[in-house]
Length: 466
Image 1 (cartoon, rainbow, N blue to C red):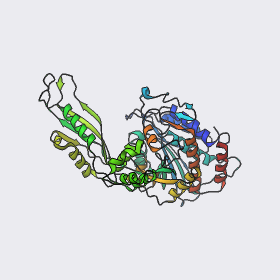
Image 2 (cartoon, rainbow, N blue to C red):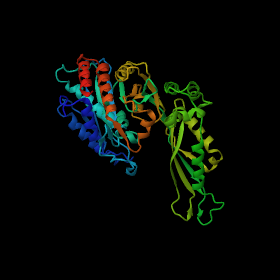
Image 3 (cartoon, helix red, strand yellow):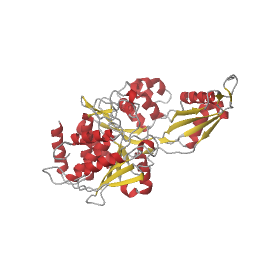
Image 4 (cartoon, rainbow, N blue to C red):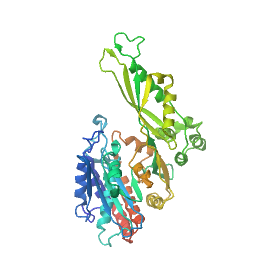
């Protein structure tokens, strides 16, 4: 692939296909991930560009690749494009197509990682290489500020071997003023408004240790079966609502949906929120998570032998906290949900990761707005609070604005977008790849400054792709 022989879209598509086929599946163990496959692919991609990628390997096979294009003005703001290269496991029986074949059917590319987030990682690499090489027939673009491309490992399991490790051991490699990363781009409402993740909820994973009394499985009546107590605990947690909190981001998102006035008002009224929730359709899970600290009982273990009543059980909880919620509130929510069962249960764990939020009154946010309006002339940016976790939190917690940004086609909404994250039949349409890579190219060239060749080149690429 060369810049002169193919468009940004073609390069992004071909690179994405190879990244999907590498099957860098992160199962949550140090031995999984295999991100070294992705690094080899990216090293080949950058050959001949004049760039010298740095590769780090905190654990065998868990590699990340970082490229820095130095700007001409040390005082100019710098920008990092941070994409992870690992993907989550699949359940093949739920897929209509081979999840690692990266087939293109009717303008749609299928595969694990196509939307989370190998699409963006590929686009970031393509834009970075294009900046380094320049476009045929134009003067080379020389950014005033540094451009960093980081293809990182282990995002799907907490980033211990990825950005977390880099933050602790090699912060110089990712030292920037601004960051773009995943989870943005889905249209919402009639304008449309284009979602930009300006922050995300925090986390407070906990475990419940349930105490019963062992006994013989032939006489269950009156027994203190830890499995039964755990099942009731799970049911109570699932029914627990907790306080409804209308964040500024949810208020803006609800207003952009184009619903009737009464429904829109109810969605931002804590007392009426649940009566209006069904009107959000496929967005119900996102709407609820945007307004509540959520507790999801995801792993339950009890018993070892079929004829032995278990005396102990454990329940692992995925807890995501809204801004302003601290460890004491988490403890309080659990005790309220469990009620009198608490006498049989110990709450274990004290880890707490606070929520993170970036300001929208920045020069980069304004540049993102301009890039979106090239695709959707009437579009507004829609600041969103992410309900999951991304590598953006490591930067925000250091005071560095980080935005989840992309531009998806009108075939998408956020409900569909979220469903494919970690779900079956993950895929992305080529039109969304085109919109995203061209928007990123514009953002990089405008935000980092430089000569005017970038604008001429973007116009040429747009004509070539249309």
